[in-house]
Length: 476
Image (tube, rainbow, N blue to C red; front, side, top):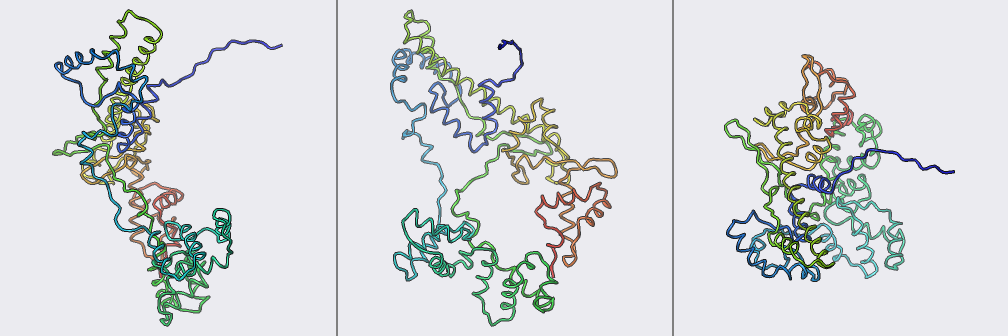
């Protein structure tokens, strides 16, 4: 027999207003205007602009009362696009906007042009276009030819085979830039070397290094290469010099196919005679207001003696839109306050750094430090820090740049891990590349300078700086 049991439990749930605030908080400045435009479109009770003067309000109130009985019903039944009409030709701002233009041709377009110069029949041309479409932004063809054969059969009903595709690919690999269409790094470098004079000893030796000893070359096992090819270290050094001047990414990074993006800082820091002043980017402080006409409509309908179902629905609709407008404006204001409080707390902790921009003056700081100062949850601080940036006299930096772990020194003080990383980078930049410093040696050198650091921490910081191990930093 089942028993009914009553139990009480406490659950923390976010209100719609809190959810809206959280979503707005993590929106970066570049996207905030789009979010506001969306809200203006769906809520006619929300308008752009500051509060109206008393004369303007009285004038608007008189005019809006004349047709308030019709306007809300029109909204309920018409396809009304909101406060911002997309076809508003009176908006002079639209004519002054600057739009980035794409100049030149993309890599794919250049390759298609070169394909047209080949003496190919219609069938071969289709195969060539399929191969070009499979080339990555960096210039490599990483897809297996068998997979491309299947693509052509299923998507276009074209029969071919791996051999036929490979013959077309060989022609594509003669295109500019050199190395395009390579199926591996080794293949890419060898394609470029094949365009050099094979009669020159250094070019021929470089080709042999890549063809016979590529594994040893990639791991910088130079002694094994010398032994395997029977050459001296001087000869190998000349060959390595040629190889390292080749382009490992013949297609570039693919930037020409990407949209142009502009970095817009959320904060602007001004140093006025040693006094730091933080300003919120104007794009983060839009002027919004609740529509006076909708407020008047609500008063009119609310005071009406007629209380039928349709009127109650109309009143409910107007209240919903007015409440949504107020919540949105409050969320925007709360966002501004939270942004400023967070940034001010960061400046207070990193005051010495912001005076000069010397990274060695950055103090250890974690999210919890800021959360405690502004009396907010760590997750809230994280949302602010993750997508915001600040413009200073010495550059634009993401807020994450100012957070780091603490490392203790022999004097008992805590220093930023960023300072330790800078020291580590300096040691490696100044090392003898013929005999690079091991992590153990770096650990000892850092300890000699007063930093209490373990070898595993040295390895972690080195990896975070994208610095390879000593063996891979070795040069002849």
